[in-house]
Length: 153
Image (cartoon, rainbow, N blue to C red; front, side, top):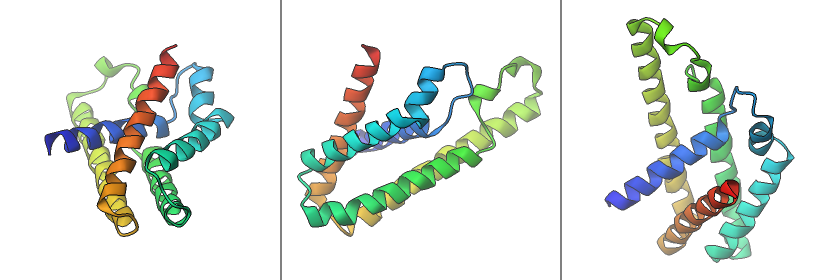
C-alpha cells in the first residue's frame, strides 16, 4: 500500500513537473515540455503504455480520451495555480505571511492534483480490469524512468 501511494506521489510530481512551464532561460527545457518534442514524447508514451499494458484496440480507444482529459485538467490546474516556485526569485524578500500563503497555495494545488489523479484512476477503472490498470501504472512509471534516463544522457 505504501509503495502504491509512493508511486502515485512520484507520478503526480512528474506530471506536475511536465505540465508546469518553467520561467527560466532554458529554451531547450521549454521546448521539451511544450514544443514539438512534447508531442513526440506523448506519442511515444501512448505507444509504450499501450504495448506494455497490452491494451486491446477497444480498450485503448476508450482509455486514452479519459487519460488525455485528465492530462488537460492537470495542465489547467498548473497553469492557473497561484504559486510558481520558479517565480519566487527573492524568497528572502517576502514576508512570513506571504510565505505562509504561498506555501498553503502550493499544498492546496498538490492536493487538487492528487484528487484529479484519483478521479482519473477511478474513471479508467470503469473501462479496464484491475490487472490492466496495474499494468498501466507500471508502464507509466517505466516510461517516466526511461525518459529521465534518456534526459540524463
